[in-house]
Image 1: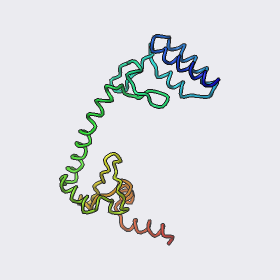
Image 2: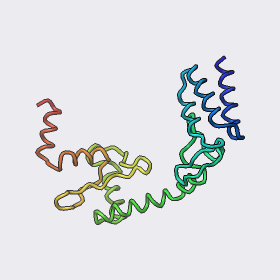
Image 3: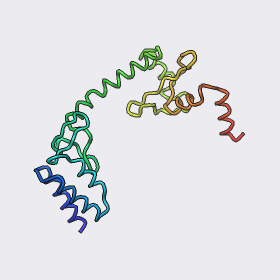
Length: 182
């Protein structure tokens, strides 16, 4: 019975693309979902707008559902055109962000690469190779907040830990003593 109901549900959702009234579909889906206890179908139905159209979060236009990638039991937030545009600009934004960060600390990309090679591509503290940014694997530039002198490259967790310890070696020793049980 469940598989027959799912077929009925899928038929109802696909028919909304061809002009069935949205409220009837939502009512049917809510009734059906309540019977089987599935709330994801209700969310998907409510995302469909007038005449079975989905609103793109980027361009704010309502478009046909086939112009959106399916994700789980719903649709992706951006239409395929806005998503493609976002994917094209993402590498440029990453490169601009990287340049801005290096300029902030007064080092060049070559100096960053030299430090990275000197550290064997690992964090100075925990020796992990995972960087702050999981997509690129780049390590954070650690600097002294009083002198703005660059100290080295750290992973995101170690860089945050030093920041939370307020760059205070005494406080760091107390934390180490505490962890060692002393």
